[in-house]
Length: 320
Image 1 (cartoon, one colour):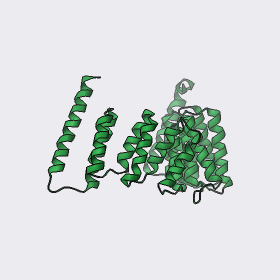
Image 2 (cartoon, rainbow, N blue to C red):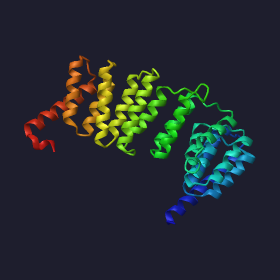
Image 3 (cartoon, rainbow, N blue to C red):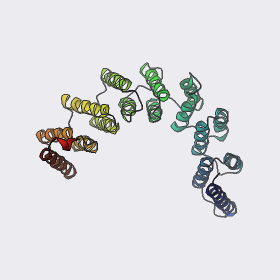
Image 4 (cartoon, rainbow, N blue to C red):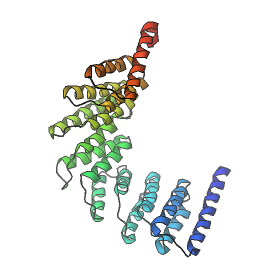
């Protein structure tokens, strides 16, 4: 272990012990809700440096003497054990929520799901059962947020779990948990952002989910297009540009109003990728639209036109 790490650990513990002593002896003690923030920070840092025994010691102490742990306290341990793959310790932490009078939140349930999908085929049902046991009703907002968390992990396992939850929502398995625009957008954004999925799989599910949205009469708003176009352009592969242009063309086809923000996102994204010819085509479309561009957008369009003119003067070699 590096000497600097040992020093950091020693310094952290020393500072915390000094704070704790001052807290215990103070006559004007702040509310538990204020003090627990400090404890949570210390617990996070201890677990980050793998000082599990010290962190557990502090947890036991505050469970007995205060300040009362909150859901962030327990989520800190859950995240640590999930990453470590210690399911027994994770289960014991979950058992502590009830006696502590603490109710899990979306992060709690997402952590459970991500930890269990590696070892249990019924991971989603276990998570749902735990939610119900905690008195948390699976609804559209909760499940959509959990789906979004799964997609951000960018693994095929988490992707399959997100699709499983979506399917169960579509099949009316949960009361008040119909998928909405946010639900579908979360999955589509996760599919398009990055190149972690096989391109054919990404394209297939991208089209399938888009069609499902339309079949359920969910009309994408301009903000949805903005999110998806931006995600597509963050994909370093050529498929990202193609997908972004499909969404742009869909907006044109369906006569969705294209405002300054959309124009800016797509032109800026193409510029960053050095897709100057495509960026220039969009700038031409912007001019034809009759929209009065903002100063930022106008500057962007000017830069594209200037760059393309320079490239045309330099000849074909400048394109490579």
